[in-house]
Length: 297
Image (tube, rainbow, N blue to C red):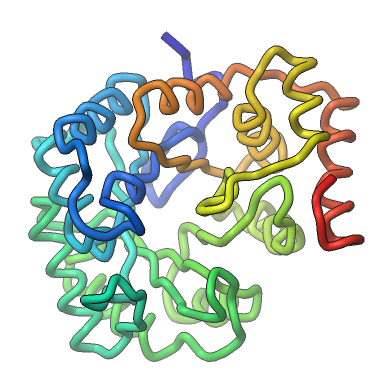
């Protein structure tokens, strides 16, 4: 079995977690909506993740909606003492599977209580405020009102720690003036490098950075250069992409998602993949090429 502790650990709130975690989004049905085709398989993947050393699971009650949290509870409750479950609020699903903002005080409060109920918890360890922004990218604008609601729920004892998702450096600064921020979750991977400066800032601050879509999300990473590097290392392109993220900064925590046990094992094996300086330089060129030409070689 892969030893995922080879990738190291980092602080998440007052807890320390392995840097390779698991994202539960893909356990819901197509389009992250409705139940999974194979419920027993979804439960088995969650149990395998924890048995493999994963102690950081990312989820949200708007996955499904409610589906992934209910699966996590069924598969893992009562939870291992070292397991940190991170959820997010700020959106709601429409009947047509659309993703819609839900950031009023009433909507945020209801979302926190929904997460508590469906996960079977008295306190949510970490809650990320998902700022809707511009699609999968952030947009400037004040986050004071919604984050203040969550900060009040934290004071009431329903939330342990607060994080932010889909935010800019300016919004991070505003958030830190309202409450302690323990993590930032933005779109970032080998090709999508817009957050390079933000990651460096968070590294200096000692705040965890959790890239969503670490493997490209709904459009998996495609790169001849990445495939060539992977072949030279006798690894898969996705393992190399994850290993690159682990090398990028010590505060990066990974949450690759999958509904397949084989893919889970493949992802976790990235913890033991060593990248030389030469290989890292070749991989860094992929992101530079994307920004220069708008495409990936």
